[in-house]
Length: 217
Ligand SMILES: NC(=O)c1ccc[n+]([C@@H]2O[C@H](COP(=O)([O-])OP(=O)(O)OC[C@H]3O[C@@H](n4cnc5c(N)ncnc54)[C@H](OP(=O)(O)O)[C@@H]3O)[C@@H](O)[C@H]2O)c1
Image 1 (cartoon, rainbow, N blue to C red):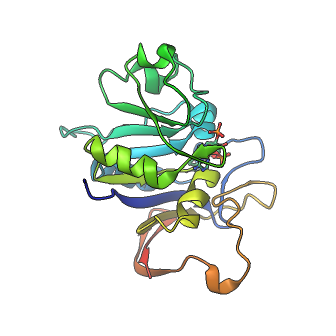
Image 2 (image 1 turned 30 degrees about the vertical axis):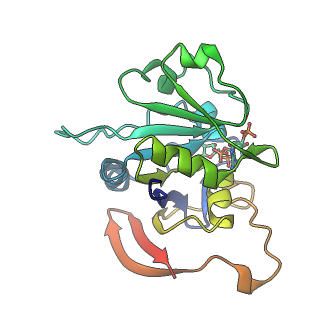
């Protein structure tokens, strides 16, 4: 059996921990230096993962776009229980150049597999993919490390399951308020003692932003 992939959670937030305005606008919260560092982090991981809401809202490429980068692009992974991802989105259209996985709880849809997307049908936990099984399947596909880039619901799921080993947090000096989208969705905590805990291992200024790095405590 392949070892479970190491999971790093990357967040780019306002000072008050929001990842988008209420309308979903999120480009760009952090500055150029923080975004360049995100691309370097992508290059250090075998795969970059997002939830389907982020894929639908932003139509991201999730590639390394560091000037001069000549290495292998990380695979892209979308958590998408019912395969809502469009076959015309950037991830699907480029799936033959850069491996692209959709993690679902249903039979693979041919409109996605015909585009070259690899649909992994995994066990369900409630009405969503079970993350432990998803990680096992990704490990079998050769993925040893994953950079989780959000959004808030997906970040919360990884934290709730205790699967986050590192956090890379880019914090911009702006406020988005309580109506903004939270970086971390509901954790269903009943007591402070259950809160996932991390220890800070580094802090660095990146232009106007802060880059905070944490490891599982
Ligand atoms: N500032 C930033 O760096 C940044 C980064 C990422 C996203 N964003 C913003 O965040 C917003 C989207 O965030 P979001 O929290 O609404 O959505 P999200 O976390 O991107 O996606 C959530 C969706 O993923 C699917 N999913 C499948 N398995 C899941 C699981 N185990 N746990 C949780 N979700 C699972 C669910 O849809 P199904 O039930 O249909 O599968 C769920 O509704 C967008 O506005 C985007 O622009 C900002």
